[in-house]
Image 1 (cartoon, rainbow, N blue to C red):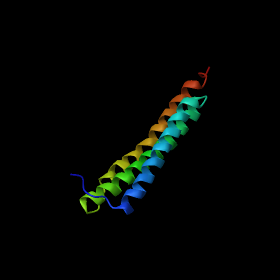
Image 2 (cartoon, rainbow, N blue to C red; image 1 turned 180 degrees about the vertical axis):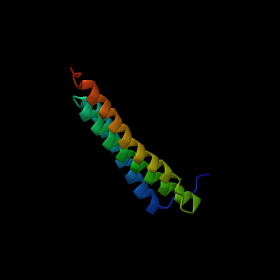
Image 3 (cartoon, helix red, strand yellow; image 1 turned 120 degrees about the vertical axis):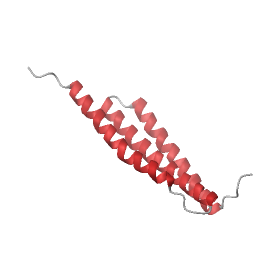
Image 4 (tube, one colour; image 1 turned 60 degrees about the horizontal axis):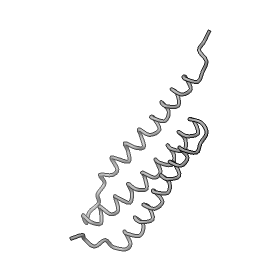
Length: 105
């Protein structure tokens, strides 16, 4: 039996899930539509990071409502995503820059 989730929690969680899904979709479409690697990596890193953030906040709201106490496990996931996504994007861009530069003579 699923516990009753109050409307004041369900409504913002629903909005956050829809916004998160749309941001992730836009980032993924940018991956397909952009002409070069540098534009692609920007659309994916921005859209998907913001989309995951919205989904994690919605998950925190629902889990807190169900448990009747603050649940902040998702903060660890958020910290992991916030720290690793920009670093991964930077490393990928540096590798692409080195790969596209002509070798020194």
